[in-house]
Length: 331
Image (cartoon, rainbow, N blue to C red):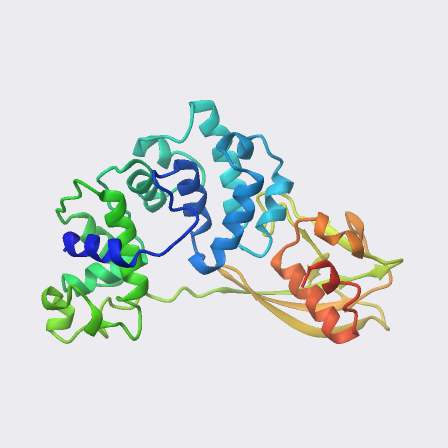
């Protein structure tokens, strides 16, 4: 299997700025953190901007978290940026990016997959990082007809020989999963593993892997208070460790709050977090308690949450205020 994956990789490997020869461990580390819950298409430009400003681990470790969040805007899952910064400082104290699993897994923001991906790709260690792509390929190729929640453990117990080019095997499997062995409309007729793929031979490619159980998101109702005066908008800086921590957002209160007559209400914005389904009702107020009134012309100097950007885009659409917001690259 792996010989065929390597042949496929050598011919079809995708071109990403973090794939360098020889491998740059810092680039691998940053890209793997960014790629958590995010596609390669989205990450590419963010990675280029990020590594231009922070080209080395030293630059990242000595940076300000606000500068990191500015570059992270729109990428989502901001705890990744915070953990990236914290881990970089710890790595610097330890002499660089660790080459051992136990040291990597102990750092904030690094789980089993990320630790093994860094070891395999950056240091050519014979380990297999297991994510959804790997689960899909292995479930089909080996015919693993087990509940999705058991796939990780099942694959971990299998014996593989990763000697030689483990980093390329890892990246080859990722490319193979995204080019050939797709979640839907998989390209079995073009697959170099077709004749030995158990799912293909048993006509189960459409049902393997088994679907994972859906996570019910907790509904949350909030009112967002929009106050614009003298060319400024009222914003709050969310504390670290809270939802949207480290980012600026319009003030929010519980939806049960009572508003005086005359407070204008606009449409509801829906915003999905990992485990939360937020419905935010915008209310326009004459004044508001907030951390700072930010000039509309200086919004790019503040790390804004994606939710805030969505609110500003809606204000543009409803009030024809493109000169106020979108000209500054906010929406």
